[in-house]
Amino acid sequence: FEWLERYASTEKDDLPNDDSQMDGTPHITVRGLAARRDISVGETVISVPRYSLLSVPSTVDHDPVLSRILGPKARREYGWDDLEEYEVPLLVVAVLYHRSLGDDSPISRYVDVLLEAPTDDF
Image 1 (tube, one colour):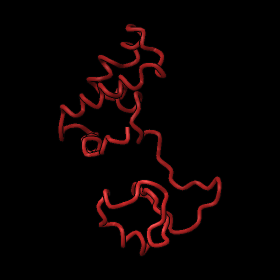
Image 2 (tube, rainbow, N blue to C red):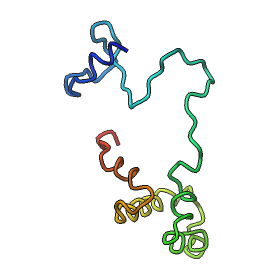
Image 3 (cartoon, rainbow, N blue to C red):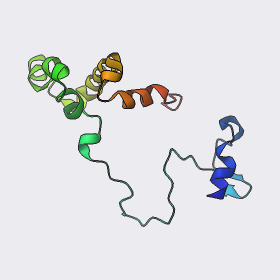
Image 4 (cartoon, rainbow, N blue to C red):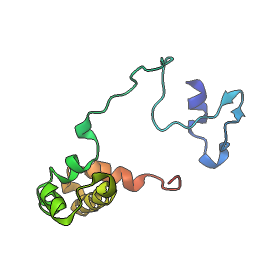
């Protein structure tokens, strides 16, 4: 990983924005995960438990306040049963609610990471 250490302190603007070579080393974007060995096709690289993911069941339905106003019963009453259609708006409301709680939110660290994440790739 010598090449990574060599370029780790390089400013983003100094790096090429394509797949060109830097000193014979291919430019790749790494968002915090790198392999120390070759990975076989079909090999599990990382496993994240479902309950760790930000989802309507894990974020809205298990929160005492959000579940009362946006939980399964409320969604049925409002006609928001189709999670494919309403999942993103419900998660946006949940994240905004948890942001308003600040450090009292159980997902405050996740919300902090979202606030720090660059949005220019969206």
